[in-house]
Image (cartoon, rainbow, N blue to C red; front, top):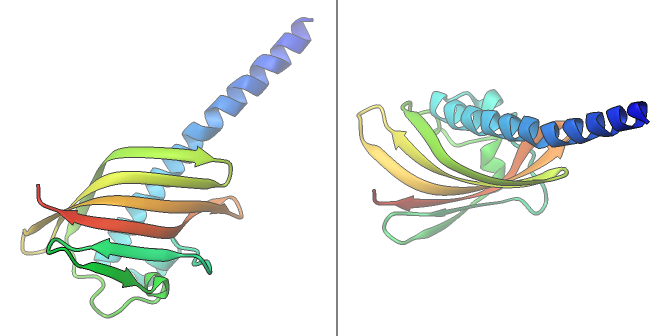
Length: 144
């Protein structure tokens, strides 16, 4: 009986710790994706993504335009990538369900010249070969 209870407790604890591990891995991936974009690290940025036939990258600009960015640019970006600066992500909210997850967060980006841009972001992820990868995102530029 004690053995059975011990096994049950072990299974429950292992099952409960998995989402925490996934949560940390997802946050780490999103921080890496932000940093590699600004650093112009094409290979590092591409490693954060797994483009699927249904991948989509949508951006709402501060002046009300909507941009439908080709997802292939996430792994083979234009020369405008890597303009430097930094980003801070906060207010993470996520839902992890098996090998899929969606995450929303706020981002404060600071350009090399000190100009700040604020956005709300929604990220879509899948676990591919045991690693979390971005498969889509929606960015909404906002005023603070």
